Length: 123
Image (cartoon, helix red, strand yellow):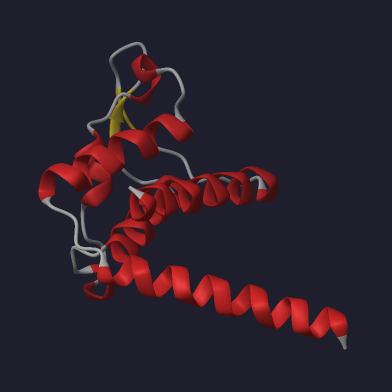
């Protein structure tokens, strides 16, 4: 019973955070800043990313339209995890960002993106 109560409380806390993210609108500058920080999570060395962070803000699906923090976080997450964005390789070749295939790395990146979004709410 105590375990079920703890899980229930966690869901309530997460639902409250999602509501705050959905209520928080981001200006275009804030969106780009969020994307810059997110690119650094995937590519800690900025010279290796080979892309402009605003590429992560491109809408792929109609469900991804919107300027709230939750939608922006999901849009950025999809680009970073599923790949597909054009970028320049270190040698200058035009290439596409690869999909993350490691479950561990994807969970790690998703967790970092969530933390990044919660920082925006707290600010």
